Length: 80
Image (cartoon, rainbow, N blue to C red; front, side, top):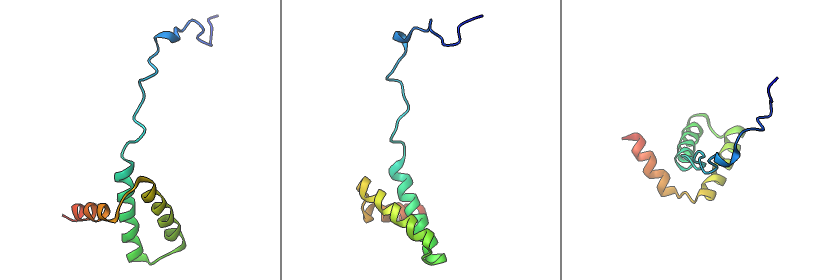
């Protein structure tokens, strides 16, 4: 029977630098999420779920240094 643990695999030739990008579209997704939450708050009112979701979104906004002006620009772009 053959070996299951691939002990003959040459790890020296493996490219460790080839990885997917970690950042992705975090900033754009956060802005879109905040816009969606604001729309839901205007329609449904402020529920406990929306209040907690907005709290977490505000934390991401401060983490990524997203300003209200950036959100306004993105919202105007979505409307147009």
